[in-house]
Amino acid sequence: MRVMLHGAVNLSNYGDYLFAELFYNTLRKKGIEAEFYTHPKYGISSFFAKHLGYEPLTKNFREMVQKCDAFVFFSGGYFVEPRKKGFLSETHHIHRYLYPASLFVKAGKPIYVLGVGAGPFENASFSKKAREILNYATAITVRNEESLQYCKEFGINNDIQVTADTALVIKEFLDREKQDVPRFETENGKKMLLFHIDSNAEVTAKLKEIVVPATIRFLKAHPDYQLYLAADGIKRDSHYQEYETIFAGCDPITLKYDDPWKLTRQIERADLIITTKLHVGIVGSALGRSVISFPFVPNKTIRFYKQIGEADRCVPLKEITTEKAYQMLEVYQDRMITVPQELVNKAKLNLELLPKG
Image (cartoon, rainbow, N blue to C red):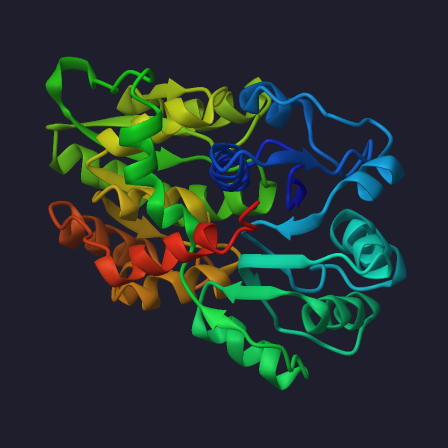
């Protein structure tokens, strides 16, 4: 059997890479050949291919569609309209995500949608095509109740199961499959405060104005912590240098992103994590670390912390104050997260529902 996998595979994003490997690895262990979308702009990136050790079995995309028996949307938050409105943005979004699936619909082949975030939907071209695919799909799981509600309101009549984010299975996978990735050790045995840097100028400005002063104050009050700077995708040196300058008085140690599993080991070691993104926080939570979240795009992130019973750890970046950020650092510095096992089991279902071969 041969299956095409697709999701947000065209860059180097940490969470999307984890999804790709979790699904790719699961299929291969079942003896199923797996392909990825090969579009030069929206298909699998060289970063993903390198770390997966992936070589396409068929380089011609239409031939690949003919030879594949099923199509799988692996986990991610892309069943939602593009952030920017307008014809051009919607066209790019359709070609990036929905176009390859539409060929499987035309061919009458099964489509699986497993562990995605969905909605809100509005009356737009992308949403209409998404509805067609979701109503056609053989199996659908969404990662939270809000996604299910959006689907129902938008006229998705197919059976949909609510599971959880697939990244919640990361501890078991890390222990079983990544024993060759060395555990991360901090310098001088200090506690580790992992500060997640961002390349978005608006996010960086907000962090610099509000969260950085709180972090510096916390580090001065707690000299047993060492500051580490980390990113969740390939960044320019200037992005790291900007944060090194911002935190110059704290002697930060910079961890440059070049391997998703090295970052996972760093997250595994962190005592306290500050992040504006979803999946550094999800992995930190799954590995039993203490996470504080200040999301710039809050909806999907708020859903997650609410789902694990830790809603107070997440305050949108546009709503946080320096004093509130400092209070959160003090409150949560020694309060590690325990994700309910029920949610981990639900996350496993996203992988268990893959084609059987």
